Image 1 (cartoon, rainbow over the protein chains, first blue to last red):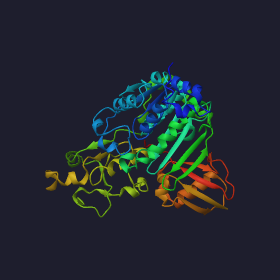
Image 2 (cartoon, rainbow over the protein chains, first blue to last red):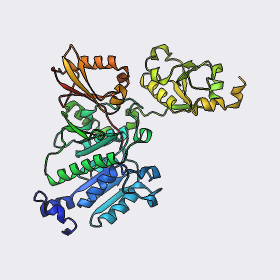
Image 3 (cartoon, each protein chain N blue to C red):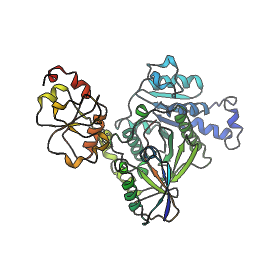
Image 4 (tube, chains in turn purple, cyan):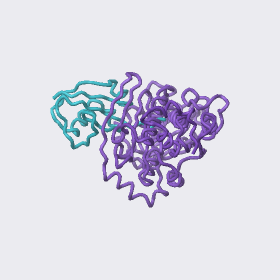
Length: 364
Length: 78
């Protein structure tokens, strides 16, 4: 094993690391899931520190709107697979390490076999279904999980399933209701935040490999970038939550995490469907001031912000079609209804604007 | 008794405060949640965990006077 002493000199001279620590880094294998806002700084620091084998899973391609925070990519990478583009960047950053790119979606079919090839799994994803999938696969494959997640100006970091510590499900046993937690794509993010949270995750990975310091095991670190405040909360392992997952091991490959996280496909209807169906309840979830009102449709007006309080006024046996101005709020409204036991729910694609422009209807 | 309540993530946006003092009579986590949902009905549509003095607790746990209570929502972004 050849270790470049020049490249790693500044960390080797730390007595806590030394040549021995550097050899541990060279021998280690880390799988990073998601090469986005969190994944980029994680990958960059792990590669630079000399983690010997780094796997990169991401099915997505680089977009221009990624560049303000996904610091491994430049203009020329736009359109490329993130996993491949990240691999190219890391090969240049540190040609002494081995990188493996998986330009595909992590699934229940490939997760366990991929995880078995690595020592540590790092979650840099952006959605709940993949986060629960990763957590469960780590429990089944018995791998430590370095977790990080962000919301607007805040971030969370923890290390799960490490030395019999708590898992992600011990912290959040059930996924949140559909649509209740917006994503970065919906509400935005300042690029530095995933940089900070991803760097904290990379630091936990290096500490685990090197066996130094205190690991964020059984602790949730919360960072608020607006007030520059760190808070740490202790989390207990809940045996029943861990057992639930271990008992699922045999069926893991057939699990549907999108379904578990309530990401059901919401049925869409077109303006034509609305004019032809008479038996469904039509709900306008816009504010009452929004135009056009489309009075001829006899829709019930329930603005989205009060919908949850008016559920008892609705008939669960009838089909409900919700619409808003352009089709975004109506999707949230449909998800809210589905979460509350309504089964026959659809939303109008394109919203009131599409209805208004629909010629046959304007004569009604 | 007096408690300090801290709201994280989208909960702070929902309540429009990140921190406040609250007087409550009862000392159980479950009853505190009822009181908070009463004060901020929007909390009924959101999911969160409760920490008391930096420890995650369950609904059956008790809260002592002057405790610092944190409402922690899950984050998905990355």
